Image 1: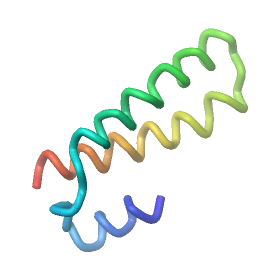
Image 2 (image 1 turned 90 degrees about the vertical axis):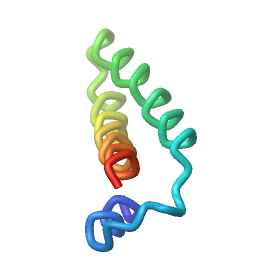
Image 3 (image 1 turned 135 degrees about the vertical axis):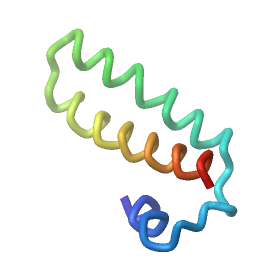
Image 4 (image 1 turned 90 degrees about the horizontal axis):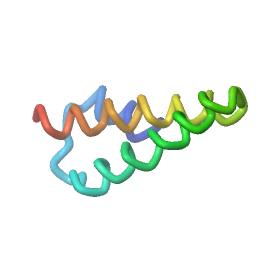
Amino acid sequence: MPQAVKIFRTRQTEDLSPPMWILQVMGFAPWVTYGATSQNWPLIVPNAICFLLACFILGMKILH
């Protein structure tokens, strides 16, 4: 969350590694899927939040 807030405020992403954020997104996606298939809300909610934040950061890195 702090990283996403910093990027939102400053629009600076040059210090971020795209492969690392791609792996982050790819790591959270299966957990959200697994949580959804097992209907396990304590697994879905935090991983979905982290997935969305990682997608935002990756998107900002790609766009800037």
